[in-house]
Length: 140
Image 1 (spheres, one colour):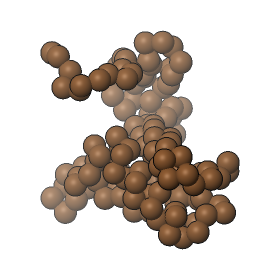
Image 2 (cartoon, helix red, strand yellow):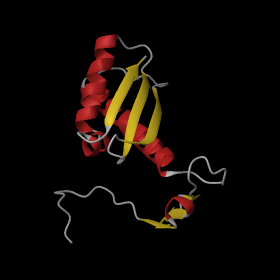
Image 3 (spheres, helix red, strand yellow):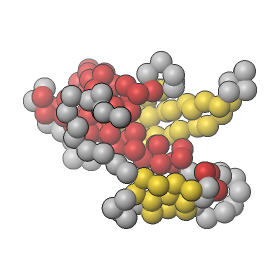
């Protein structure tokens, strides 16, 4: 099937077996992980942890790009702590809830707010989850 994208920048290829109790690896071998359901005590990571890391990395980069475009001096120790919670709605549908605690030391509150807004508009993870996953931020 042809891609709906006008320009393809990068494609990640992953192979997963066994679902939450299996394993996954990328075609280049850089990521090779055991998967385990949270709370089982079995060794391995889970999709929520992988999503938290991926979303945080993408969002931090989107803020950095916004800072460069706005000629804002990017704090070298900028960071995000992200919680991704798997739960169920009142209708028993599985759902994610994301809380990001964003640390942009040395920047004023208005600049921080603008960078976060710009990142939510441009980060592919934010755009992919918009309208379906509640995302909250706390900004330091």
